[in-house]
Length: 178
Image (cartoon, rainbow, N blue to C red; front, top):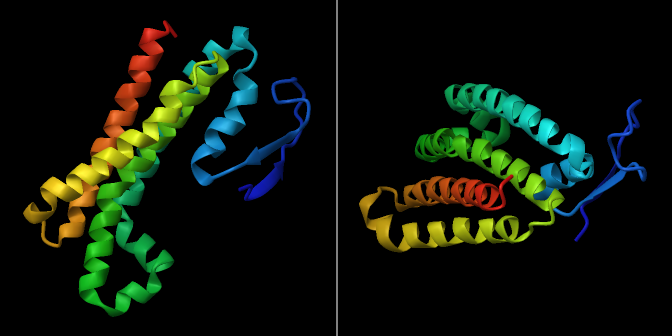
């Protein structure tokens, strides 16, 4: 299902696709589908990958830390109705704080996946969501009795799934000598 089509502004250097359009199929694939045309020039891909990885690590770390410390403000902005119920607000605020590192992880996974895809290696990026799903399912089965409320076990599942996704991508990059 195609959600939206964005027009990319052409720049002086021919780095982007000559079509000038990127079609996004879901929120999670936007980064990959935006970067993939840029990485298709294999000579510049490695330098672009390194520069982008450095930029993403720094930027995402800062954004993640800021969002963790301002999670109550974010919850009030995006889930205002939860402020009426202190218990619901507390759970939402806690989950927001703990789940923001996953945004960091999935962004790095998207960059690694785009780099692998430009080298015609598709299996790791296709398999990475499976690790997240398995991690969440296993955390619900085995950890729900250890958390109160039990929904907190999903935080563990998501964070472990994100780590597994990053490990899979690093292994795929290493295996393919990229």
